[in-house]
Every structure is written in C-alpha cells, then in structure tokens.
Length: 256
Image (cartoon, rainbow, N blue to C red; front, side, top):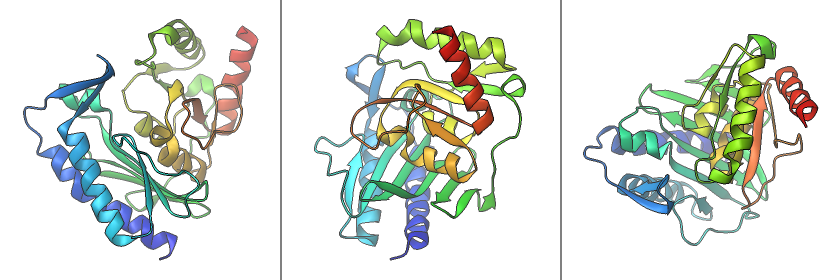
C-alpha cells in the first residue's frame, strides 16, 4: 500500500473515531500519573477504533499509542503513532479544543500524518516530500517575524518542577511577540504553525504535527535547538517558521 493510500486510511479512521468525541456526554475522568494527567473511556474507545481500522488496512502494522500499556517497537517497518485525544483535559471540561493525532512511520522515519479537529471539521495532513494540507488545501508557514507573531506555548502540567522555566519562556515570548496563547493541545499548536514551545512532550504529541509543520515549510527542534528525537523519551519541542524559531532560540540563549 502506498503512503498516500495509508494517509487516506488514517483520515477516514480519524473521521469515524471523531463521532465518539462529538457524541460524548457526561465525561468522567480517571487520573494517571497525577491530578492533571487524566484519561477517559473515550480516549480508550477512540484508540481501539483507530487500531481496529488501521490494522484492517495494514495488517502487518505495529502501534505506539498513548493509552497502551505495552507499546510496540519504534523501529518497526510499519508503525502508527497515535494520540487518541490530544487535549483530554479540554475534552473533560467541555472546552471544545481537542484533536485526534496519528502519524505513520517506517523504521524510524515519519512519512504520513493527520491531525483532526472534529469541532471545527479541520483535517491537517502531510506526506513527507508531498507538502502539508488543511482540508486538502495546501498550507504554508507565515513569513512574519517573531515581533509580528502570536506564540502558542504549553505548560508541561504533569511536571510542576518545570513551571518556573516554562513561565520564564512564556514571558520572554510575550515580551518579544504580539501575544501568547495556551490552548492545551500540542498537536493543534503545531498545526497552527505558530511558534510553539513546550518542555516535555511525548512522541505521540508531536510526531504528526511536526511532519505537518515541516511540510508546510516550518522547522521543529528541541528547546535547545537540536533535532527532534524519535524515541519513547519525553522531549522539549519548539516549532515555527525558521526565522521566527531561530530568533526565539537566540533570545533564550541570551537569557541563559
């Protein structure tokens, strides 16, 4: 199966799974690592549906998912990386800003990705070397400077020990841009292709969004400016148009 067909299957599976999110009522949350790290029955149901649909399309595929106890090999020849509901706290609280994020990788390289916001019916997608799209229309990053940009940032809520560093960066962004936003979903922040920065993300948070940013002409890096890791370890992520990102990284370096 070609990568374009795989992407179409991902998009179709996400649209079907989105019905579960849109029909949700009386959502109850369970805590995982702490009170801010929550999961719902809908996260699990969405993930199960996605796995079922994608396994039917590609029986040899492996899966690396947020709500999976035994995650499969990242170096597999065919691997789907899934965050069933990115922005679960938003979902639980009825703030309609969450998404489904799926990336497809082969032997450590992400080749296709789709991030779907069911509330706005926005499907962000990308094929490596084939560009990035929103609802099948090509998208490109902004050509604005940092001073003329709005910066999205995340607060690493599961790691309160990172709060001082996180909010120092947010203040730096605020002082050097038009404004800042904290919207609670890393995948949609990346798809907005605004400069974003968060100190602790997992692969399922950024695998799909990073490819979409890159295929839209942007850049994704670690918070220290290095290449994004393809691993099970958590990482800080910074993303945006190259000039904006480089300017912001220079500012953070100058602050020491």
